[in-house]
Length: 290
Ligand SMILES: [Zn+2]
Image (tube, rainbow, N blue to C red; front, side, top):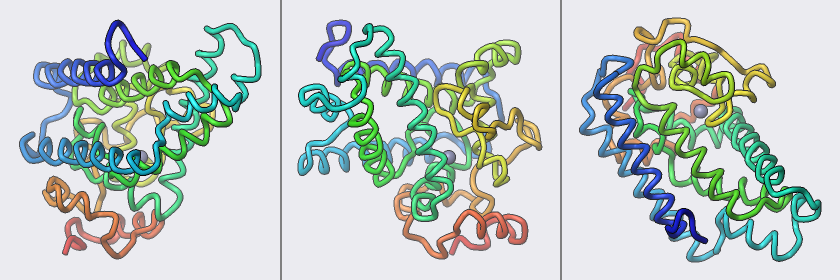
């Protein structure tokens, strides 16, 4: 499959690198918050997690050739999925594919907050003590593999074109780098953009140490789902400058270490969401990081 004369892999990598570079420049020129930790160790860890994701996905797909795009090709060849059965105009098929897949990712994100075993994986993302463009790639390899299965199941039911899946994944990944970035999108612009898309200020609420804020604003691309399903919190209660980012129990530099982050899902006690919010109210930060 080719995009703008590039192979699918070159297209994905090129787009990722371009958006990342733009965001890194904006973070330097127009920072939103003062950094508590320097970039060095966090970036090494977050990029290290990205490399682990790539290696884990390569290993899994070597054994079971399963990715969202492969599933989309298989579904269209075998007539699986609603969009492969209906004869809709191409533009409408693409629009439906992107909107429905975005809802699936939103729902999957919500579920990773509610199911304790999935929260163990997803809290690696939330444990980042700062937020910037690299936080967008800080997902544990097991969560990435879980996500491939969820997307593939959705694709079997929906039957989107493989090219639409590539474009959708590029949109969600690009949007995630944008809305995790620590740059100051002027407020009037934020208001216009967040009418449809998730902005950095909107997503920052989701990375608050306060559990009721963590359990809000699940969107990565479209902002509509949180409004429709009543999980929308417009601004953080402590304000964007003063709010603490990460998990209440781990506010030291431990989460900036690669080995800590990769082993975090297997750490005990398990900290189910309810236990964690209780702990956040009663325990001192760092007290459980033994
Ligand atoms: Zn989350």
